Length: 84
Length: 84
Image (cartoon, rainbow over all chains, first blue to last red; front, side, top):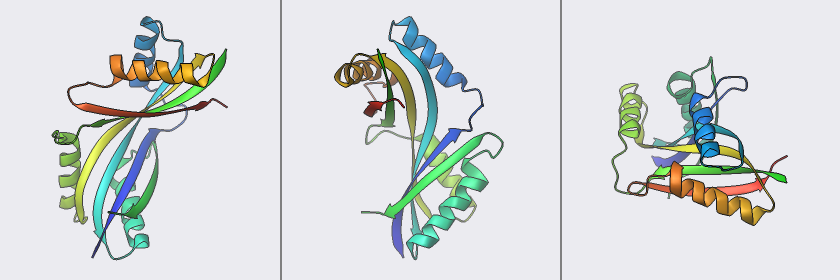
């Protein structure tokens, strides 16, 4: 069984309020940085076992849909590569 | 003044405990996914004004050091590109 490394990014869908980003933006402006906007997203770096890349990718997609992304507010993207 | 988009990734330094990653890993194993490890990091997508790319980069580096990364436990990387 081969090992695969997946990099999953979970970000808010457009139109959703990002309180952490907005607070960070305001903090940076208070420090006089010329910042226009800040958006926050999360990266999960997942190592998993699978027979082939297509199998690893389908498992990662299912993991995103079942556990990592909230379908009402999150978008997700992922890349899967052989783990070194 | 031009607009620049920076993508900043804040991750834990090697050797630091990542409770969110470990809990996610255990949850995925409980769901029978063949996951070996999970690490969590954060992306800040920052739009800012600056005269030139070098100026935007030096501001982003300073922002990471002053506000976004905790020097005792976090590493940071960033890329800056012209905002479209």
